Image 1 (spheres, rainbow, N blue to C red):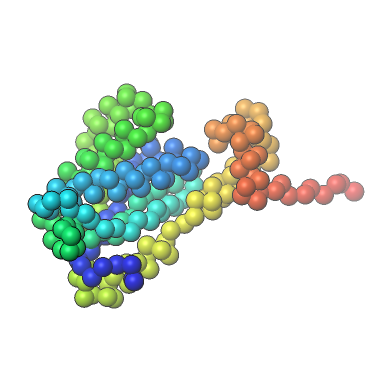
Image 2 (cartoon, helix red, strand yellow):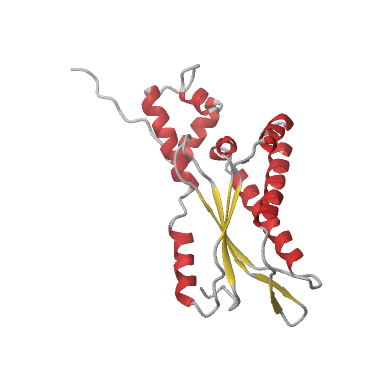
Length: 221
C-alpha cells in the first residue's frame, strides 16, 4: 500500500481468447509482451481521456495464470490511477468516463501485432478472429476506488498478489501430467516432447530447470 499515491484507482483485467492462450504456456517471454500490450493500451487510453500536456498514469501490474494446457488462462491485472498526473507539481486529473469497447479494440490490435511479429500467428488467423462477433478478448473495469477507502485498496492489493500463480508451477504440473500419460517417454511421435511441441533437448533443459526427475522404478524380483 505504501507505493500507491492517494488518488482514485481502478482495477482492470485484460484477457485473451482461448485459441491464443496455448502460445503463452511454453514461451514465457510472451507474458512480458502481453503485460506490455495491456499497459500500453491502457496508458494510451487514459492519456486521451485526460486533456492535459504530457499526462502520465501510474500502475501496478500482475500476471495471473490458471490451469494446464487445456485450461491455461493468462490474464493481466492492472491496478491503475483513475486519471493522470501532469505538470511539474504532480497535479492529478481524474479521467473522463471510459469506453471499454474502444480500450478492448486497442488491446486486441496490440496483441495481434505482437504475436504476428513473433511468428506465432498468421494474418489469416487474425482475419478469422476479427470476423467473430465475440473475439474472445475482454477488458474488465472495476468501480472507482476512493483514496480514502483503505480497506478496499488493501483487499484488492491482497487479491492481486495472492492469486498469482507462478509460471514455473503451471509448466511443471503440465509436464508431469504429460509424462504420466507417456510413461516418461520423451522422444518419438508419441513422446512427451512431441505432445508438448518442444524439441527433446529443450524439454530436457526445462526438466532440469524445474527440478523434474523421473521416479526410480523397482527391478522385478
